[in-house]
Length: 485
Image (cartoon, rainbow, N blue to C red; front, top):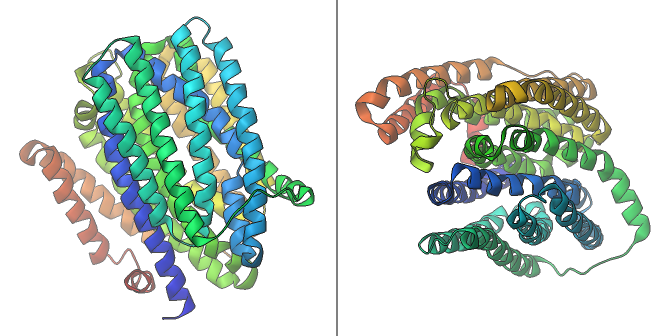
């Protein structure tokens, strides 16, 4: 098999294992949400998810884009992988310590009216510390296209957390159980960290390194992307914080269920592009035509995945929310529930799916500063719209604002990346066929839902979707050849 075939197989296998791991983790996450929403009140669940969303700001600041930079640099310079990883690990440890302590201190101020949330933020800070460290080691597995091992570690972590949460739910004891739920995540993160370190140690030795000239150069490279990630996190997470403080914990809880589902679905695109990055970066330097094909195939593949979610969601969102929550979270006349919010957020997620292709292209091109500008525009629009409309329209305003911002950010990423790729424009014939197939699938879900039930309608509609994909030849022969290889 030629090198291109090996690379394609490596990317797809790496992505497959990540999909498998994400599917299992998403399933366990939804089961966890069901336990939480049926043992905590809507307000308490709002407190729970607000803590995690608050910590998310500091977690992404501690990440600072170093994972993606590490994958890019180790892929581009394989002879000095140990040097790159050792120094990035040292930088990451310092950033994690600083931002997690800062989160605990600021959380104590922000949540001063609720003592249990003040302690809760410190528990989640510990969880985040171990999760970020595990993510740092995962960069080595990513570079070697061994993300199957990372998926195993993630599943192991989720199993620990879910098992503990289930156990604690059987002995529910008010605020004590709230703390126990938080500690369950900490034990899961510890399990993942230990397992990832074991996997990485079998591939390569590692140690902390303190090459300060390298630190300076790495921070210089990661600074624009790190700031861009922080801005991205703001417009992804700020809506729940604003809902919490402007409309109360109950609406935050209602919005939070939909956000949890979107988070589970959204990470697939990141996993896929992280798998593509090790071959995209070298291709941009050595073979521009190959790089253009990689970008086109990545766009087609993510559109293939996101389109059926866009058209299928309205038919199944109510059943899905009922399945993982309860009737208190559903819409009724005069009340926007989690089901309708999910429909809006999936539209935003689809724009995000497509935008992430061009985000990673800008990173591979070394254009992080442009990404910083794009995300600054996105977060500015997000904050302005949310401040204006959330006080009056609550969670509906937050959901629609997400659509506007994701559409704007995707358009800007596309515009900037196309300017930096000479003689490249997206081919849209495949996208049109995918769109037609997804639309037909969406009608099928609506028609079958009442007659065949929730699960059967999804299964039969998925079969129809992929049948139409192949009948319309939405995916060309070269792409199928790479899949078979």
